[in-house]
Image (cartoon, rainbow, N blue to C red; front, side):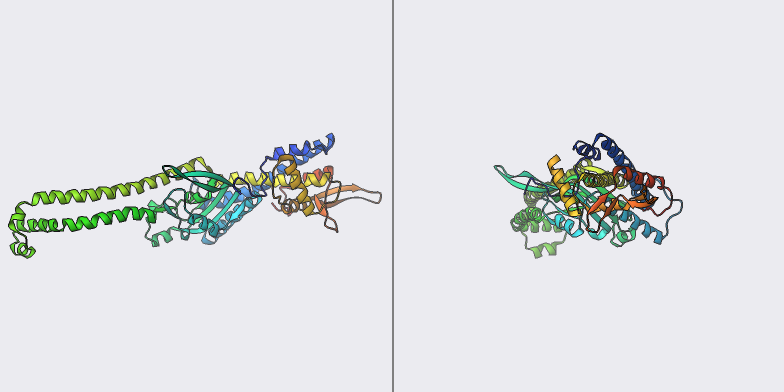
Length: 447
């Protein structure tokens, strides 16, 4: 339905707002509220550290593919190293987009969108054969109704499918490929062999083609008909009318060249040759009229092309959020926020729940809570934060009547019936503190 939004896993609020919402829920005592704030702070710092590690991986491996780099490696990578570095960047890209709750768009889906008629009546084409890699993600999908002017008193209603955020990774083939296609390397709008990352907002599905650096434009069949049919229609009677005059012009030229036998072969009277100037003027006038009409039609097409270029400029300037290495940094910030918001919501609801919850029940409870508190309908990603809480492990000392020992335990565990259990706040903070203490020790912690 136009005006509605599809349910997505993305949480459209800041991490700080989510924490404040939990504190205002009235389920925690004053003492526990302070502990919960500390828990959220140290958890956020830990995940900031983890995503910083991902950013360092990208920075170390993106250099040979960065079209805007101002630094060079001391030693150029070998072919095997080059391919491994490319895979590292791509894997990290997919990792952070999935953590940021972005949704993948297949190449086939993008090509189908490109095949649809754009808002500008101009044929565009993107050559996917020029790409070594193409990856696309989006987040937020809504609809907007616009009215396009068709005739003086008639407007066409059109519903646009709009991506609130869209991310593209494009790796172009090496220069040898473009040389084999007889392309002029210095005239390309991109650098062969480089990897481009684009991050845009509020892009209509029909305008995805504007985001590609190798987009080309051509006349539509309508343009060709408007340009060609009138020209042909005007040319045929002109040619028939001007044919006798053209013979006279040829005869006049032959007369100047003193080619009398050829003039006789054309069967032209001498009197007609003496009065050739009016014929010449009439023929040139008709030719100029036809040429003027053709020029007008071509100018109309060029104006469309200029409008297309303006739309490209507006999209790249006003809708651009980040490019290349800056896009990675921006997306990592979003992924870090999403990861923390999800974990905080899962831990909070398990901590305050008076009944045992399995993953499906917990997922439904969080979605209902979000809709009640904020009027926001989301499709909460329950398995990601559960796995993250389960992966955070540390030793907790527990004094019992029988023994005083320390055992390694996860922030989240499951019982035999599949219900979820989280450590109490004090023990959870002890675990997080130990994880921090061991962050720079090679003890097997996965970063």
